[in-house]
Length: 365
Image (cartoon, rainbow, N blue to C red; front, side, top):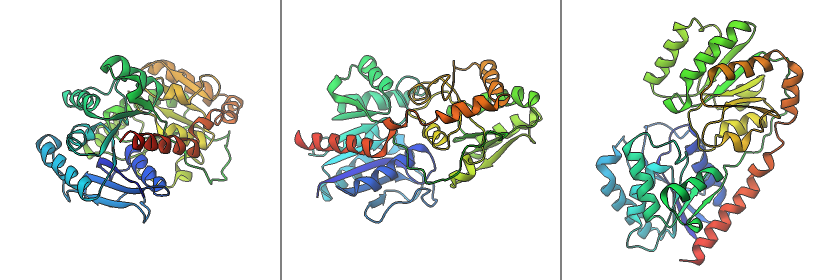
């Protein structure tokens, strides 16, 4: 059986990258021997369940700094790849770019880097720029989440077209029998408490819409550092929204998150391919989202199953949300079209793309 490895900086978190890494590992075990490798840890249980066929390893049982341990981690990975005869290694997220690329030097293991955000806007820190640059020079293949980001890699980094491809995240099959309730008066947002997710914008929008429609409430699901959570909680309190805009914390049961909601709102500054929008569409929710790079414009059809708002126009977003709040028929119309474009995120179709890519890499080894 062919042997592959999926490598991620941290796996015991609840974000989209962790979900993708675990889901991909679980599915690929049907065809390959799959090794799932975490480098550091938050010292917590894995949020997403790994099936028994996946060979799971974590290199450190404590937090380590990437910048001080790149060479050490690269050597550990190289030894692991040699000892376990790993033929193709995938790095999930750009934090893996440097140490994974270095680990592949001088051995037969092919290195594939999977950018889980985007190369257009996610370059706030110098380290991120270095990680992407090194990845483009040393990796055998690069996978982006969207067509838009693939084009940017080719244009910005001069990556040959044949070296970079895009593969969407897939949507998980929904087994919920909950139907959309057009009489719901609840808005929901899901995401990590982090600068990227734009929850400061969310509070601005909530202040405007909840002042005009006090019969509605807004729930935020997600986790993050205590400092980030406290920052948003303080903004909520400063705007006297604590009774209407509620932080619900981490929740695994998607029926509880999405099942009784009327509108989904996303205020992110940037994304890769936001899984939360696919989840919201699984529950037939109308969506209002900033047209941030990248992903929303490849998921939401503006004016058909949601609204895409120019970044970061909180007034326009507020107006669009109010339109939906005040028109249950419009909400129902958007809900009826929520799954119009879901075929391109079909799990079997996307798994086939992954397998075809892996087999192509094997052919050129």
